Image (tube, rainbow, N blue to C red):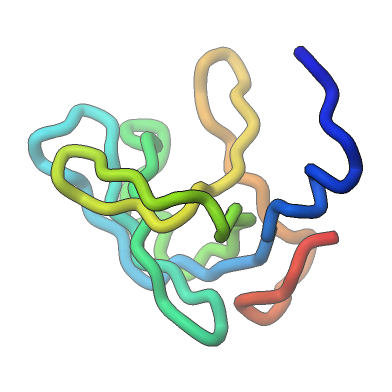
Length: 108
């Protein structure tokens, strides 16, 4: 994988978000529609987390989100960012703060 400069990395806006609501996208085997709280605004994300995470288990969790990606449409739903997750044995593992922090807190 090629390297990126520190200045390129700094262009990413990484923030903590709290999941406000989550529901499966019915026509998909893995997509979940999330509403997230970024402190100053709420946004919609589409994430391929099912069946590894159930929507009802996601509500209230804090996650790390890239907030300044171009929006992308998945199965008719606009995703306004991307959550960060590790992938272990083909399964996503959400990244989350060690302790509770306010939604919208920048990651540096």
